[in-house]
Amino acid sequence: MARQQQAQLTPKQQALRDLEDARASLAFHASHAVEEWSPKALFTRSVEKHRALWIGAAAVAGMAALKAIWPVRGTQRHAEGSLSGVERSGLFALLLSPLLALARKSVMNYGTQLFETYLRQKISPNVPDSEAV
Image 1 (cartoon, helix red, strand yellow):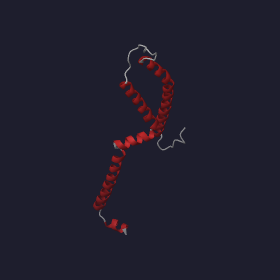
Image 2 (tube, helix red, strand yellow):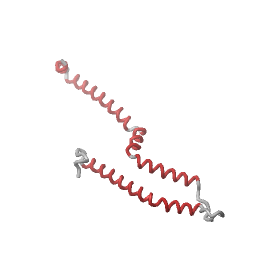
Image 3 (tube, one colour):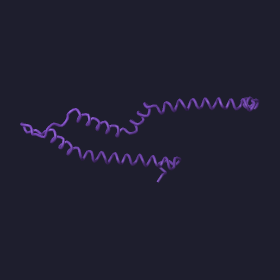
Image 4 (spheres, one colour):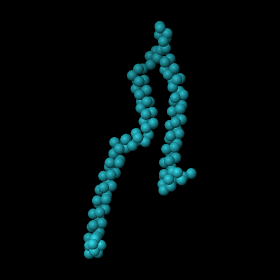
């Protein structure tokens, strides 16, 4: 039945119908793109995909905020024998250096893996990661 109606349409009417269908499809895809590329959606996907990096960045930002709130004071030793601000910072850095080295290594491994995946997708987008060498 629909074939008979299309056969009865003039080429101009057929072109107008195709144009209307294309506009409807474009409107659907444009609204989908607006939803997918909104800042909220991008941020949500980024947090879900890179959870460890966001946690690490939050920890670094928290440490920086604490450092800004409690500034380092003089280098004198207190009367009761406790460590001063500078000595505490050095001790804190000494204790944190192995953790930072481990974090640096983890971040570099994760970044390398992410970059390799990106390159594989750009070089051969039709080959799945399991088949790529």
